[in-house]
Image (cartoon, rainbow, N blue to C red; front, side, top):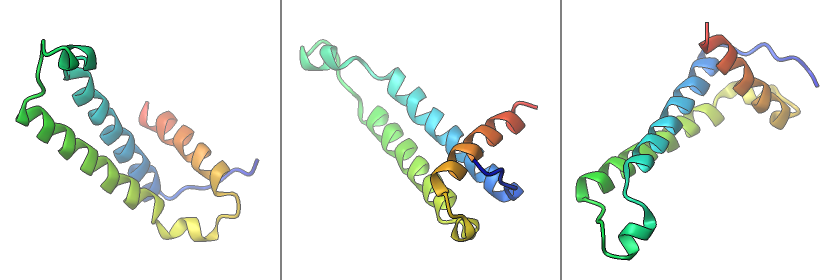
Length: 95
């Protein structure tokens, strides 16, 4: 697998996507369980629905920014590059 030299903007775009994805998980985790909703023991409020919709929209936006970066046009093996980018963003974000 080739080693890629990612521009800082792409690393930041990956970190922004990861944060947005974590936010979706956080909102989802705060929702009542599906079983509680189905049994009528709990409801998902309009505020919770809106928070989830907003978090998902932000994640989609961050994904579009990440994957539509012009840097990808010059990459032959995009799958390998994406995996390496994810690893690099996590490693550099931890410092």
